[in-house]
Image (cartoon, rainbow, N blue to C red):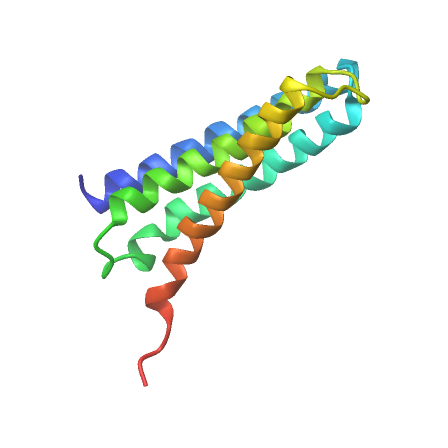
Length: 130
């Protein structure tokens, strides 16, 4: 797959996440946990914007990396997992505990770790050689 196709994948995923965040902004006040809904809305808009920017900068960021396909996929999956983990709690009452909240926390954890590793791997080649 070419660099342009990977950049477009990041760009389209970012646009989809941004659009989801905008649409979710219209309904989160009517959900059982509006505060978690606001968090999910803001996170989707911000994460979508970051993915669009990453897609636009992708050809300049990763010309020397070997695992560019893996990094592009990991970035897309990480942000969607994090978003799913933030969106699920909005649909249950605030004081709920149990399996649903544990699943949401698991999605947040996996998404966050994957996001930090994949975005961090982009910064490694930018380190200046001495």
